Length: 383
Image: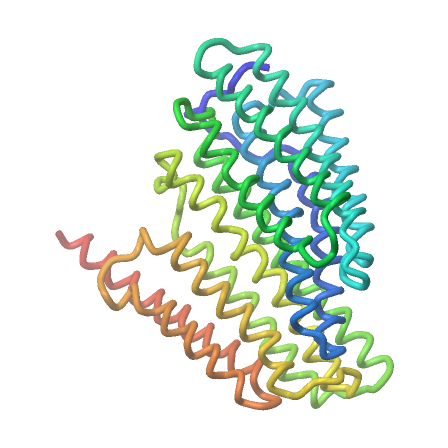
């Protein structure tokens, strides 16, 4: 298992990586469904906390595999088998999501998470065995970091009482996030900037697609049971505008040139927790809005609207701060996404039209950004 060339031309996602992503979306869908159910039953705090905890395990396991694969994807027999073990782990995690939400029992999700991490530890040890010098040291540091954190996760899951379990979870999540900085302190792994940007972009598309699927299923169920077309059309159209605009916002500018140092790349990659998490939560919010429209949710109109507008606003703000800010020029370009974020939050108070107003606001923001970009490029072409 030799490191791959970080300047390799035409590097693209492999079929195995795409299968890996699709299997992870199963867990994302489970988390989204449970979040929607918790909010609809008027337990938003419980649902949001559970969603944040479960989504961290899903996202961080996916991210660790993605960066490792970018540096060491040999696609041989041991590599494929280890990847299949990680896929099995995320399916175990997904099976434990209902128990985590309904009973605050995270034991099955932790087991699934540990299965994924054991397989990744094997991958790093294999990489270390076939490397020398600083590259070997980095791989061993990753393996040691993974082993230590998994011991911590077992302790938290088995021995901490329910009253302090969440604090132990937060502590272990912080420890897990620190492993890349510890491992790559002296030698960066050979991840490929274009490949990493493509992988994160593909997962963004899949998560946004999951939001459309969740909303579609909710609308279909509502139509079958209630035939409430008039109430559902603004939600459906507004939801589509939100998802389309979210796609346009994320992919408006290339990002691989920004990933030129380990510090930048780690911050960018870890910051995607908020981008992925909010994108998936949009679908849950749309489902909640549909349930309220057909009188199945036990919440106010404002809470149902916030279930869509808050994750949408978080997506916009996180995308600006983490992903697109570096490519913008001038105050006007920098102001579009923050202002759109505030306007989307304000649309929460538009009653049953909140989702549609939020969608129209995002679409208007996209249009303004495109005009500003076009003017900048036109000015540059004249110089």
